[in-house]
Amino acid sequence: MSEDLIPSKQSSPGSDSSVEVARITARQAISVAVITSLAGLLGGAVGYFANHPANPPANPPQHAVPYIQHRISIDGLTLLSWNKARHQNLAIRIVADVNGQAYSYPSRVIWADIGSGMSKEEFPLAPAETYRVHFSAYLRSPDGGVMFLQSQEFEETLPGVEYAYLLYAVDVKTDIHGPEAAVQISYHVQ
Image 1 (cartoon, rainbow, N blue to C red):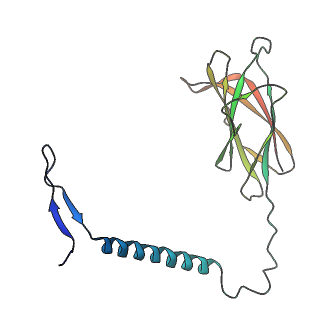
Image 2 (cartoon, helix red, strand yellow; image 1 turned 135 degrees about the vertical axis):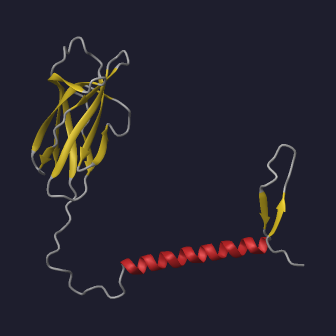
Image 3 (tube, rainbow, N blue to C red; image 1 turned 90 degrees about the horizontal axis):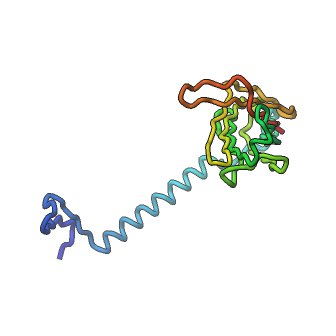
């Protein structure tokens, strides 16, 4: 009793009769699962041993520099060209682009209420000697309107120096910046 792959045509009213179904036995299914598992284990072992040599060098290279984990810290935000009495209860979402990697503040909620109680937030950075930093933001008014803020500048940022980045209101229809800076973001890399 041979139970090889036996194509069978299934046809039912209203179905495409050109579809073929292959049936396999339980033994064949187990064989496929075992072969797949062994291939995964073998691939994992090859990958592990390729990255972990059996005889590592006794003395690491002398030119190795210790890895320092840098972080960008968004320290605060200041409204510049706004009537603060009229614009109470504003909220913001900031996107920091650092060497091509985007970070979003706040990271755990959608909006951060603007005010003295804004929390600082830090994001780990990939190793580099300097960092190209660019910010954009979305400002939400109490009535639900959202304004896009941006600057065309990228700042070369060094660890240990505090920076202030200016954002301008952008007309999304014309992509033209407003004449005055609307928001200042305080940040540093440590």
